[in-house]
Image 1 (cartoon, helix red, strand yellow):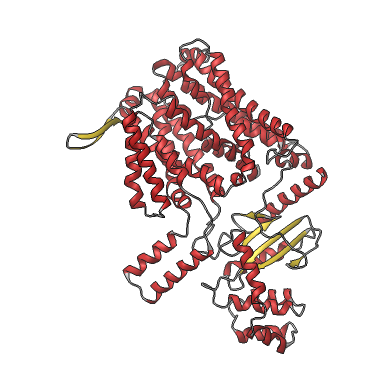
Image 2: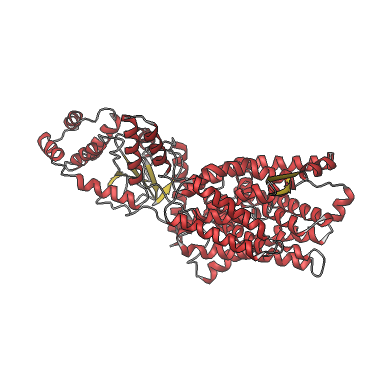
Length: 621
C-alpha cells in the first residue's frame, strides 16, 4: 500500500524516510559504541595503533596523509554533514519551516538549547584548564536522538519527531559554524579565499541549471581540499553543499516528459534513448531528494557507526571513573546536556508562547516538548568531533565519558517522560502529546461542500480527500480501504480528479464519464462502477455502465462526445498542481497531506490523530 502512479513509489515522503532510517541505524550505532568500548579495554594498544595507522594519497611529490581516525573524522564525516545540510534545506523548502513565521520558535529554542548548556559548562569549569572545551556541551546529535526516540517513545506521534528535527536543525547549523570559527586550527587566508571562490562556482553551476553529478563531484572535492588546507575543519564543506541542494515535489509536467522519453525508448530501444529516458526519470526528482537517497543510508549505517568505533573507545577502570565523574569537564558536559537542554527547550517554548499570546507555540503538547528536551541531551557526533579538537590526554577521555553518560541519562529521562505520559487518561494523554497547534494546510483550495464530490456528513470532524485516477491500479487498491473507512460515521470523504493521461490513456474519458453521471445525480454510482472495472474503460464500456446505473443514454453520450465536463476536471487538476500533487492516489487529511502507506491500519491511525486534534481545537475555542 505504498504504490502510487508516478515513476517511483513514496516519492514525496522524505521526512518519514529520514526518521525510519535513523530508527533503524540507532541499533547499529549503539552496537558500534559498545564495540569501541570493549575493544579499547580488551586491547587498548591495538585500538590506538589501528586508528593511528597512516593513510596517504599522493601523486608524485604532492598529496595528503593522515591517520585513519582523521580520515574518518574530517573525511567521511563530511558526508554525514552533507545529509544534515540536505535535511535542513528540505525543512525550509517543504517542511514545517516553509512558513517562515514558524522559524521563530525553533530558532530561539535551538540557540538557547546551546547557550544554556554552554553556560552550565563554563560555570562548572570557571577558571579551569578545561573551560576552552565549552563547545562539547552544546550540540544535540539529531540523528541519534531521532533513532533512540523511535525506540524509547514507541507510539509517539510523528509530529513529535518533526518538532525535534525542526528545532535541532538550528543546533546542527550553529554547531558547524562554531567548529569552523572557534575550533579550527590557525586559518590560512589564501586557501580560505580559494574555498569561497569554489563555493561561488558551485552556486553558479546551480544557477545555470547544471544537474550532472560528474560536474559537481570535482568541484565539491576541491572545496573540501581548500578548507582542509585553510585550517577550517573540512566537514563544513558537507553542510554548505547540502544547504545549496533545493528540495521540491516532482512536477507533473516533468513526470509527463519522462513518460514521453520512456515511450520513445519503448518504440525504439536504443542506447541513446535509454540514456535519455534514464536522465529524464532522474531529473524529475529534486537534487535534495536524489542526494539523500544516495548518501543517507551510507552515513547512517556505515559512516556514523565507523565514527563511533574510531572515537568512542575509552580505557576505563574504577579509579578512572571515580576521577572522571568528579572532574569539571565531565560534570560540565553531563549537567549541560541533562539539565541545560530540557530547561532551554521547555523554557523557550513556554516563553515564546507567553510573549506572543499563543500565536507562536509548539506544534505538539507540553509532555512532548519535555520529551524533546530530554532526548536533546544526547550529544555524540559533533560533541566528539569538538572534543577531539579541544582536548587531549586525560581531558579527552573525561569529555568522552561525559558525552556517553549524558546520552545514557538523557535516554532514561526520555523513557520516563513517555512512560508517565502513557499512563495518563486517554484524553489528557492526547492533549499532552499533540497540543493545540495551528496546522499548516497543504490542500488548495479547501473542500467546498457544494462544488466537491462528497461522501459522509458535512459536519464530520475529519475530512479525507483523495486525488485519484480511475485507471490507476493503486487507486483500485486504495478504494477497498476507503470503503472500509466510510463505515466511520464521523468521516467525510472527497474525490478529486487527477487523470494521468500520459500513462493511463482512458483516465481522462473515464473522469468525464463520472462527471456526466454527476450531471444526472449518479456520481458515486458511476465512480464505484469504474473503480470496480478498471480494466474495461473503453467508450463502449462506459456506455454499458451508464445503462447499468440508470442514466439517460442520449444525454450521457452527448456529454462524453462533446467533452462537456472537461473544464470541471481541469479545475481539479489545477488544484492538484497547487497542492503539489503529482501522482495517484494522494490523500489529504483535514487539509494536511498524508505521506506513506494507505493501508487500513495506517490511514485509520492518521484519521484518529486528526480527530483528536480537531476535538482539542474545538474545545479551546
